[in-house]
Figure 1 (cartoon, rainbow, N blue to C red):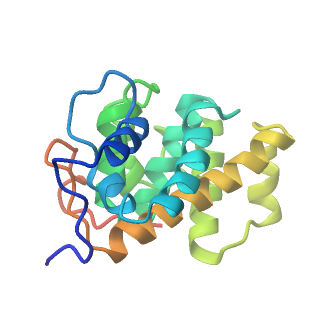
Figure 2: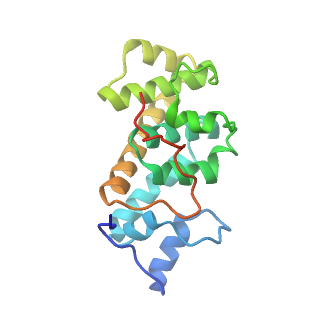
Length: 192
């Protein structure tokens, strides 16, 4: 399978270089992500997307652990190995997801005993949103036991944002970064 839209290639125009570096965390020396190189083909769209993505990733109300669990599960449910693998390497372990829990974001159920009640509520909500684009009263109540109103609102935007990212990555058939973690063996990322 061939990627459907190529990313910008070095040597980068100085403005593209600045834009790509802004997408990447400070001090990171790896080549900018292919996702960012592709989005840089449409600078206006990329700048708008970067603002929301950065706000959710760096300035959000959700804890790192909650955020990364939601991102991992959304990516897994969308079958988006690219985003799942990048986030697992870059953030998930630092956000206190255990080596046992990381593959369970792809292969496990929200009822798995590896999850705390808070994690189970987040996973159940992601799963329901993925399956029906709605939350049942029970899933909402479980979510609100752990999140205040603003966090719950941010959770919904975060889950939707990473579904959008999965659409872009999967729709363009962008291959995972060579350093990213692969989905667990035999997983397709579509469990429920």
